[in-house]
Image (tube, rainbow, N blue to C red; front, side, top):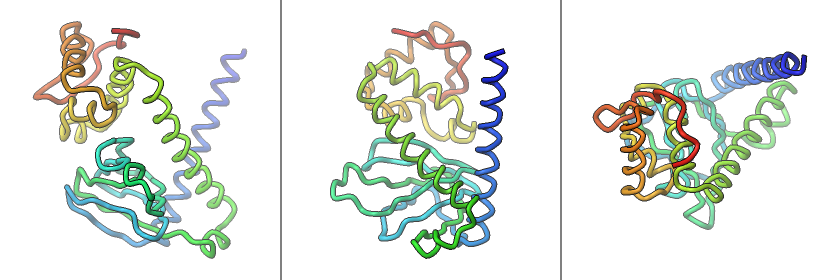
Length: 216
């Protein structure tokens, strides 16, 4: 009985999230500016805040210039708080890893005041999730050992589209997301390959073959 109720709550939460995302996509597409950027270009802070819907392509979210916090791809929506940070190490920027077309909508107090309630709620949910996800990732990085960081990174990489997994090498993504040394990461990846836990081709993760061990 409890499991059934939990499943219903989870399904309701997922349905609400999907509806919220659909509302935001429509709002951004109708009111935003359609832009494009080529692979290798970077999007830095400006003096405006924006909400962005990625129509095609993929963006690598970085804290500072090296730490990868996320990859947002086709269909994704992200909140870009473009207020430049005094500390360059804390500034969020994006690196384009696949040629992209996207809609950018600048946000100001006037625009927010005119929003329909449902769209405002959807935008608030997006900003909240964005902040919560970043905080959780930072906390995990500060409190986990090297293997736990790599394990979490592998599971995240495995969830990415094949086009992105084949574009960036596994060791690059692990180094960029965890900060674990290259030599230590290579040793762990080698052990996982020998144990038939992961499939790697030309340096890129193909898939996780079975549940990764809890410790190393």
